[in-house]
Length: 213
Image (cartoon, rainbow, N blue to C red; front, side, top):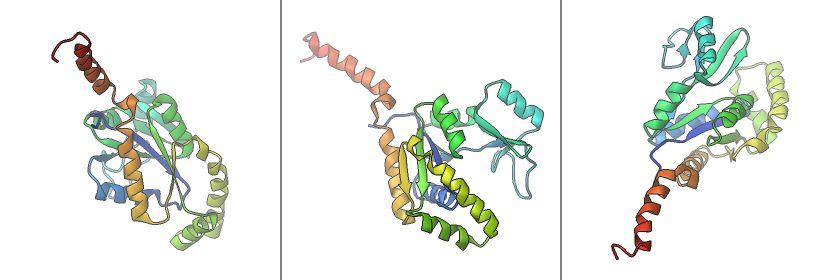
């Protein structure tokens, strides 16, 4: 028996852990997932579309969303706002979709505080040496940037105990399957099956009265 409403899943992890690749493969391999689309005040890049990569807003529009409590979480980076629209996530969850939200640790903990039923997953390589190897192997960043990412990873590691599950991304397909199993298992948690519990409790109560036996 599966609950009808979807599960909100927040995915975080070190830069270089393979979060994006993992999420992309999960959505290719399994149905019933929706990727949360963030809102931002930064300008669209060539080829980006409103409602596909991001929901693009002016600063005034974004601050109005904040005042209306229309965002699950938000933060400001280098003069631009980024946040998670509540209405979009709720629409997908109510449609029975499991919603995947990829954000950093501070944002993840804000979501968990606001929505305690949220599932927090932290993605990591099997070792620090492997993390370094992946960052260097990408060949897209200077050693200075890589060093800053590794230094940031030291801070991020301190937040790992706050997460519900740690996903070691060693072999991609195995990690994808494990991630899917964890998310599906959440549907059978008692707090996610309240409607079913109430229904069967009422049905069984009839037997106590000696009826329908």
